Amino acid sequence: MQERAIVVYNVKSHSLLPEDNPKIITTKSMIQLAEMDITLGRAYYNLSVPSLVEVIIKRKEGMLSSTGALSVRTGKFTGRSPDDRYIVDDEETHNTIDWGKVNHPISEDNFEKILRMMKKHVEDKELFIFDGFVGADPENRLPIRIINNRAWHNLFARQLFIRPQPEELDIRAPEFTLLSCDDFAAKPEEMGTRTETFIIINFKKKLVLIGSTSYAGEIKKAMFSIMNFVLPRKGVFPMHCSANVGKRGDTALFFGLSGTGKTTLSADSKRRLVGDDEHGWSEDGIFNFEGGCYAKCINLDKESEPQIWSAIRFGSVMENVVMHDGTREPDFDNGSLTENTRVAYPIDYINGAVIPSIAGHPKVIVFLTADAFGVMPPIAKLTKQGAMYHFMSGYTSKLAGTERGITEPKETFSHCFGAPFMPLHASKYAQMLGKKITEHGTRVYLINTGWTGGPYGLGKRMNLTYTRAMVTAAIKGKIEEVTTKHHEIFNLDMPTSCSGVPNEVLDPRNTWSDKEKYDAAARRLAALFVKNFKKFGSIPKEIVKAGPKI
Image (cartoon, helix red, strand yellow):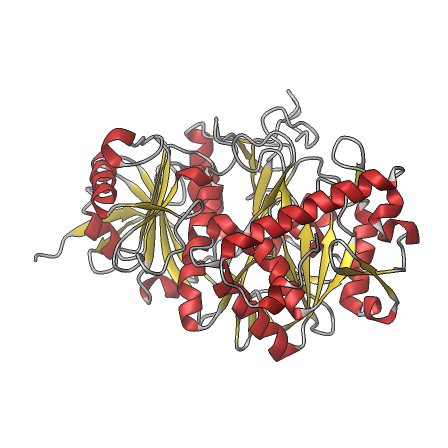
């Protein structure tokens, strides 16, 4: 086969300055593009942040805010579309994927139909290419290529994933390629999709296709899903968690779904941030998958979240944040477009962040839940078996805007605190967690960042100052020094005191004026735990016994 050259313009501005030279990339180093056999029009390769911002503004994809951050809108898709996410069912995945409500199969034939149509759709169009990595650990990193029809999506990818050094671009070809075109729609009747929207992962061909959605979070989470499939085969535990480290090298992990506080609680001025969302745990320690952060902006407050506030500057990408007319000042309290307002920024925008994002074995793990019923303890100690139970349960409340159709908090069980991104059975990941806890003597705590004094609508959200105090006490080992009280319904041990937190807050029953209503609500939630856990099938009895009692 004759080698075909592809011209990719590596420019510093959209107008092609005189000193810019076109970069010729052969099919050997552009293998994924060559396999897709795309005839490119003009493609911009690994543009700098200023260049991308310039292109975005010229293309009218976004505008600069008063902070210098780019402001964009994602249209009707202001959250993920989990029901439109597919994995190709082939010999690579048929007997390994945990098929069901989370992992939806699509046939190889339908994947090929969509791929052929997407290739034709992007012919001779302007595309933006980012080559980089997922995984800060050189031994476990995944070389990736992100191809977008939107310049702002490419800026998002550049800020969220790990940016390569110039010499690294010629060393390792991408192992996975993602093609995202928000202006391409599937034909459900012909292509086997539920709607026009799709996020499809093909593990055999190492391709990801995304269409008919402008929500950039789909790009990030598709790569997370890939790591959750690839790393366990290497003996590395993939985790949906944030991580930080203290001055003495004490690493802490924070598990939780979107909106539970992973980003907020890990961005601690007294500790160094390793990463805000996705990590791997190898034999050497932990490492961040990403090179950036993706923080929620709704009701963002400078005083309570100063690090995130300061990170919203030039190079950051704000999604669906309403700006004041004239001044272009962000109105973080305005949720008229969505409650799921977001900002993406590189991790080095956080002062003192650990770079490269690698740390030692965690001494403490915190499971975060936003309990909309207001009945879960603010903090509780977990045994190894209890940790595995609650890890598999992944209880929280979906918060408004995180997914389409969610307008107010709703109880949910998302195994491994990230079910939409977990291709394997929950027990596989739980076994890895239990093994790590045993090997490293890691302490585990369950912390409720949700409601207290009553359910959503009657009670109030847990005071962030109290939550920070409980997290600090857990990390410093202070919780181990106080007496505990056993919660008979949830089968949890609650500390009776914690510095900086009123004692009456630590037992959720004390915060309800009607104790009988609390007991009824707690028993109802406990029954939901038990019912949900049955879906996992045969699980060791010692793990099942660590759960709530009904």
